[in-house]
Structure formats: C-alpha cells, structure tokens
Image (tube, rainbow, N blue to C red; front, side, top):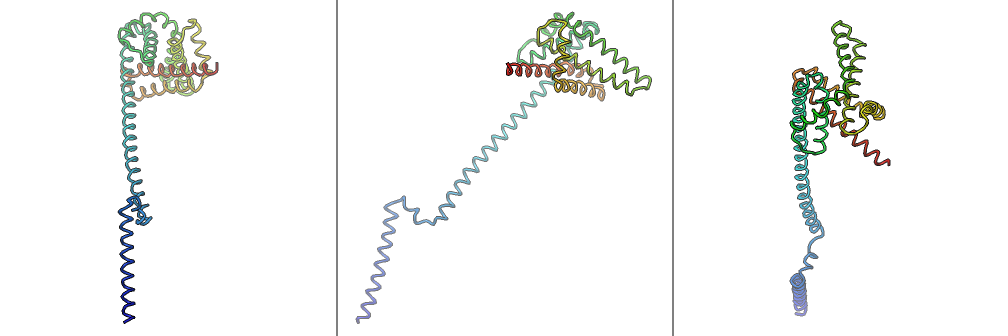
Length: 276
C-alpha cells in the first residue's frame, strides 16, 4: 500500500510541475508580447532579418538600375541631338558660303564668306539667337574688304600650292615635292583658320592678326595639331567621297575650325585668368 501511494504522489507531482510550467509559459507569452522572440531559435531570427535586408537591397538595386538606364538613355539622346544639330549647322553654313561666294564672284566672295561663317558659328556656340540669312548677309557686307585683306595672303599662297600639286601629279612626279607641297598647304590652311578665329574673337591692329596667330600656334602646338588633323580629315573624306564637296566640305572647313578656335581661346583665357 505504501509503495502504491508513493507512486501516485510522484505522478501527481510530475503532472503539477508540467501544468505549472505550461501555465508559466502561457502567462509569459500572453503577458509580455515583446518576449515572444525569446522562445524562437536565434538562427530563425537571423534568417528573418537576412530576408528583409535582401528584399530592401533588391528594391534599391532595381531602382538604381532603372535610374542608370534612364540617365544613359537621356545622355545618348542628348548626344544624338547635338550631333544632328551640328550636322544641320554645317549644311546651313555650306549653303550660305556658296551663295555669298558666288555673290562676290568667287575671288572676292570666298574670304568674307569664311569670316562670316566663323563669326556666326562663334555666336551660335555662345548661345545667341539670330536670323541666320539676314545676319550672314549683313556681316558679309560689313567684313567684305577687311576679310579679303586679311585672308588674301593665305589665298594666294594656297592657290600656288594647289597648282604645284596638280602639276606634280600631271607630270607623274608626285613624290617628295608633292608631299612637301601638300604639307605646306595644310600649314597654310591651319594658319588661315587660326587667323580667322582670332579676327572674329579679338579686336587688335589689323596687321597684327597673322603675326599673333603664328606666335599663338608656336606656343600651343597640341591645339594646332588638332586643328590641322581636322582639316586633313575633312579634305581626305572629300577626296574619298567627292560627292560631298558641294554639300558638306566648305561648311565643315568653316564651322568645325570655328568651334575649335572658340574652345582654344576660351581655354587660353581661363589659364591666363588663373595665372593672374
């Protein structure tokens, strides 16, 4: 009898301890919601936080990807628009060059057409708005005699070099002499472009433009080489594709050097300002 009572008491103690522990757990879960996580395994908590962090990072990376795509599309669109705008301006300058060169009888009309095209290209690069044809005609008339006097030396020397190159090729002796003549022609064209650029940018004594252009070219050889390379590329493209001569060549030889000279002189002015 005593043994059976002791077994019963032991079972009752186990049941009461189990009930009390379950009640303690229940009261802890129900009484303090902030301690519910204490019953979860630490690994499960870290997994939850990792999933949240991955979800946030995924949304952020997706947003950055969309933003980068939008910026790239906007950049490409702007570059294409600038390219088409530049080609359009070259076409306009080319047409106006031939119109006013013919109006001056070619010999007297070319130089003021070149100077006027460079001056209008500079104004356009500065963001100024103007009626193109009327402004071109007005500037062409104003600069007619001065532009002829400014570029006449380059025109005479350039024409002589062209005749020499043609004679060398006609006689079959297109070798070293023709190469020297071609190089001299490129130098003359480059110096003429620099002189025209100085003329439309700065006011100085009329006879000083050629001298100043020569001095500036000696002190800024990388800029001069870039300008000469541009002229060579345009002339080379015209030689390979002669069909572009009446439509693009003259406009490109005016507008592109004008843009380059504008950039060169602005850079030089900034350097001088920083030094002073």
